[in-house]
Length: 384
Image 1 (cartoon, rainbow, N blue to C red):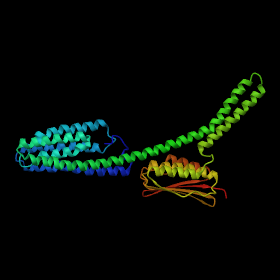
Image 2 (cartoon, rainbow, N blue to C red):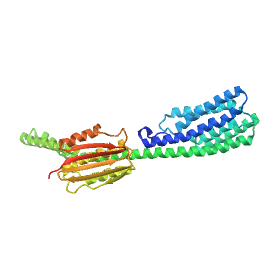
Image 3 (cartoon, rainbow, N blue to C red):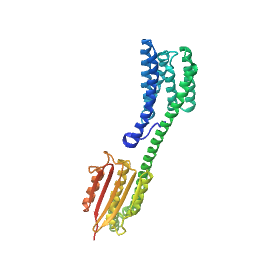
Image 4 (cartoon, one colour):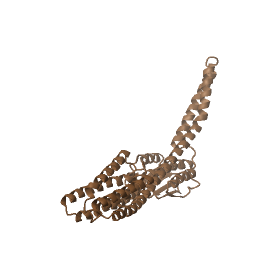
């Protein structure tokens, strides 16, 4: 079982898969109610019918709790243990409550035994599940001997039907676990890509500041030594330190705001690579060769935010990125599917900041959503 994972509340497709798995597993609960209920219909004693109905209902509720925990990986382990302990206690109680119902005429408890065997692979590892199965079969045979029923009939129901239910349940939960692990892997790749981008930026800042700070430190030390013996030269050195510091500050600001030399083609390739590594089919049209550096820097900032939004705010299967130049305007369009109501819109802080940034240089940012397709369009003026 998966002990922790990505909550399906944030993933529409994963949430639907979980709902389908729960619905399929719920058929076993209906079997736990309907088939033993046949014994209730055949039991003439009202007291036994009442006790049997209570036992069957309690078993169905505890079984539902365990099956729910099996496909809820983010559930606290304490709740899992409580659900399993509750099912164990109820299963023991069903022997005196349900076993006497329709004694000799219908293997009432054997159907509950089949359900227990069917759930064993969901709760414990295979060796323990086999031991649990053997114990349930012994109980089923003992119930048959106690109630005067057919031992072979009880064993056939508990063992045969239980093995079939176990195979179906195990496959369903195994497939669900695969989906959760795949989603975890996708999220991990996105986090890794973001971490690599932060490291790349840190290296850029180090390259920008490393040399300047080294020179500043040396010149400041030299100015301090010269101050007592040559104040005039010490003053010149101090002035150079001030100029170097101002130059370094300008370079850092340019790095932070994206005004340094940027290869938009490399940025496109990097964003497309991250999206593809996360399972998004990405189509990229190369930018115009004559795009000015200033416009490329603005579009690169928009591209990074758009790529982040595709990963954070959608469950996209495809993404298309296109950059065109039309006379005095450069236009970038990023479209993707999988957008939902919680996706980015014109009120998003990241998009609002980009809109303000583009407006400062005479550009414009527009977004629109059509069904599940989200489209971002950025325009930047370019000199004729």
